[in-house]
Image (cartoon, rainbow, N blue to C red; front, side, top):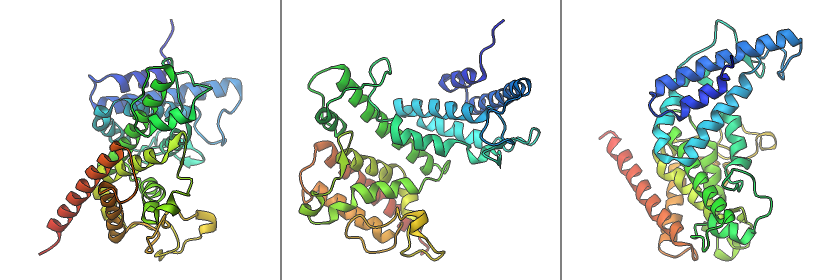
Length: 333
């Protein structure tokens, strides 16, 4: 008799919309335990360690990577799934520690509250998976047209329906949905994500505060990640997680950091990308600086942009205004 591998059962649960978020999370945790048990038996029989650290629990790293990739694939494809997936992640986090088996991962005690492997999986998704052009059979396209990629990823409607045009259109949709989902997790308080949004705004919005001849000379984007897609991505975060971004006071650089910051070892992701001259991080004045730039885009004062970018800027300004209005109402009289 053949048995369905635990990872396949966990993936099936993620796709099963008839299951409650609690039930899906329970299946993920249970199947991860089964994976650990089976991997432990295999390691005992073979006498070989299958983990990076001798005291790590075998099997769970690969299981979690596969689960998170499946979950993010669903989020990238279907924005209507975002709330349900966020609830699943929150239920997984609430599962606590695996005290009975004293699990370890990367030489550290395992705790579901930490969402093990979530951060690393997202880093891999950002760097290669989401915008990699794949055909209708999910095979990577080896030869592509840079000009076509830039056009479609920037928001142009493809003139023809081909394997490559569908690949880039799919990549654009998946990328924006993926970022909207991560921003949703931040907005719901499921997973705090403060590094990525400030990097996006710094790289793709703030340069527009400089004279046009200056920022036009910059290499703002590449054919497979054009500037306008970066702008839309940054604005997605400002719309979806605006309240959290507005309230955040984290510093990612030496300016304004009271705890000390070594840019040689930590970098300075919060530094200015244009004319901003305040702290290397979040600040209400910087928020207003971003909004001023977006207003100028809407008015046509920051060069010519595609209609989708102008519309995104308009919607983002409206969302930022609402965040500020709510903040003012909450202030003590």
